[in-house]
Image 1: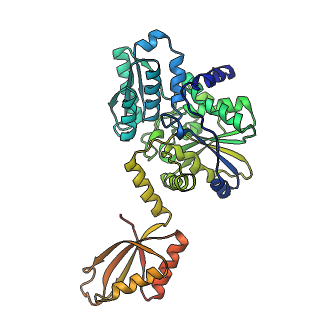
Image 2: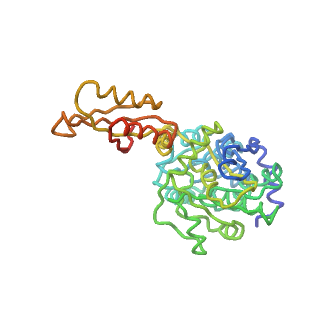
Image 3: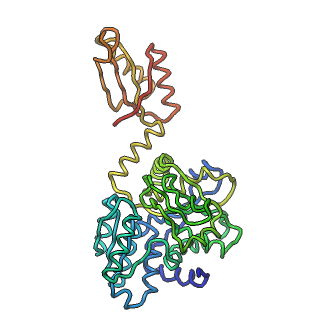
Length: 403
């Protein structure tokens, strides 16, 4: 059972390994949504995510004999680091099975805590099945990343901290992968204030909990496809599902494009890096149909590798019309390129790349294609540049941007 006593015990225990992640009030997100939005920055934890809470509390409840057998788990990254770090604290062996698609930064950080890392399967569920096989074969103690009440209790300590800092909180948005965090947070939140609304948030490409909610039982998705690798789960937890069903008020599914834009919002307005799964609750804010409420978005983690980060930034700039590509046709004669450049410069457009295609037409005197990739201030500025090109006698056409 998830009880208040257990949550209080876990809250004291996790203080041994967690950093204080005070709420951050967001002027930007508050103005965008019409609510008072606070961020709970668990991406600032020592291991880069909240997962150390559940892992450490769970391991603290094990017997010496269970720890001595060695610990094993499966994880897309953050739980892996939490278990590896917690196991190191207890001087216990840790074996971590991670999907082959796990970002390198998460693999290397897990190894840095002394764990043995095995890469297996394309998604979490495949890695988890293999970890169970190894546990049975070698006698390891399995630490489930979400379908474990002790783990969920440790994760729920986040809600205790939120209430202590913001007692009048009205909405808490919590990311969902398998459901451990949502179980702990929603259960404790309802124990402390039955009137509070706790909303789960999933990636649309891996909304296993939403599907289970609608079916009234745990269901398995045939496939998952999302950039939010930390929440790419096919099957939610069976043991925790009754708590989720009882305490979660709603589930929101957000698209990958929304996560990309949320990343830019966090970096530019809060100077904060959050991984795609950690951004679920930020992207979900605009889906809340409420105003003037005190809302806390839990930022669950910040373990994003640099390659993924650069790709997300680039895609975000394109989605925000901060970078766009326009095609114009012009005669193949001297001076035409400078005329186009002058038109763009007058509108303060910044040219990033030029592509000159002389073979777009057989009659080169009539038309060659010039593709210009530009940096702008956003959609309104992009439209201003396009209108200026039209006024100058060109017929600009926006095309897909490729950097």
